[in-house]
Image (cartoon, rainbow, N blue to C red; front, side, top):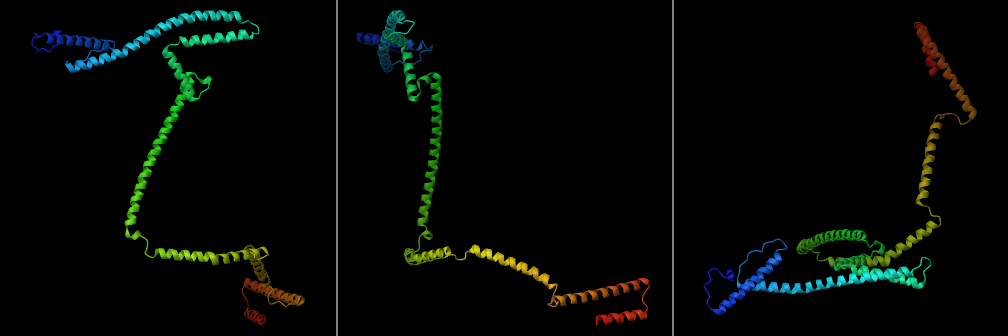
Length: 342
């Protein structure tokens, strides 16, 4: 008891103080044993702390609450253990009896309705036995799997852990994608908010700027423009529509179209081209008489003159080749040339 008293505590002779010190020492011993029981399974050392009445009071309250919570748990664990032993014994006995009865009642041939019912009862008994043989943790796990299957809307054939894990991973992936999409939308929303704030600030500055305010007579001009629009819509527009309708009727009755004018223009240009070609050919016969016989005689005369000139040219060329012309011959030749020119 003296180990829990302060080192500098004086010797106590009062009986009441001695009883209080003994009670405190007993409480400290209880707290130390409780702390040791909690830290020993974890292979940890009890940490050091200040030993004063306030600490003792807090630790006593904590230990009392912990034991109050541990007692019901221990009782439940003991009851579950005893019940499990009894259930295992009774289920083993009932299972043997049910299996023997099912083997006696079910025949190898076509079973009767009573035999089928007995078989169903046997299956139900086996299922009940398997369910009762599960531990609380197993029942909780089975319940969790069934709830997860219902939540994922999986069929009975896909209720195994592999399909459940695959569906759960798919949902996790989809959740991650949705989370990323939400983050992108939040970012876009923040950008839109910033842009909206900037536009509002710009609008405020524009409204305050004198150059951006509307003119004084803008309202009157707007009214005048609207009046003119109404006047045109009421008077001029119907007239234009009537003219368009008349033109459409005239076109339907055989009015010359732009396409027809284009085709006629192309034909006219083709005729002009052919006329030019014919003019070039006719110009070669310019100066001939209009009569065919006279034109032939004139053509023959021209051909004879051409032949005589050709002969004279040949004779002159031969004289030049032989060594030159005599003066008399040259004079005669010049005279003949002059006569022919005349």
